[in-house]
Image (cartoon, rainbow, N blue to C red; front, side, top):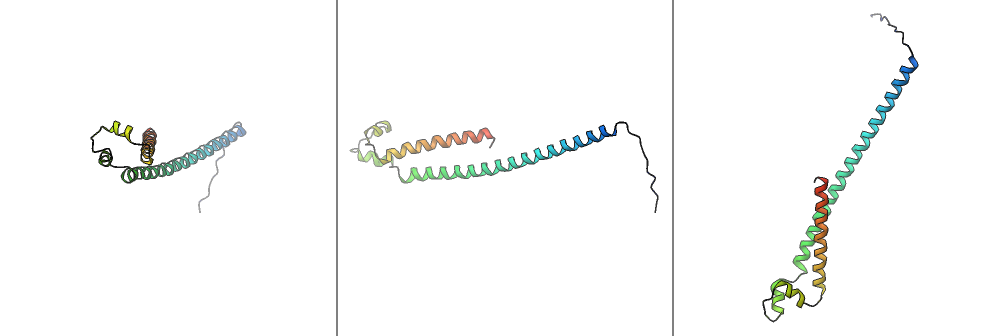
Length: 126
């Protein structure tokens, strides 16, 4: 076995050097802690964005279903008004306030919400 010859070096102010090394270790630990927090935030962001995308898909599907099932076709409405062809604006004025007209307002509100959410998604970079 080889014998090791220790080398000794004289340091001036060893306590100051020790203090600097310890403060560097503390700063390194803080940096690692901050990095871990950033990773958690990124992971949470991805989860929330995935959840938001699923909700958006569901909302869009519900709006399509609502338009298909509950709203009368324009042809049906025209037939109800004595067979006269009338512009869509006039049709809306002539139709009595029913659940179907209320549904149209709800659909318009949902469309606006979808537009707002899509705008937010584009701002987030998705």
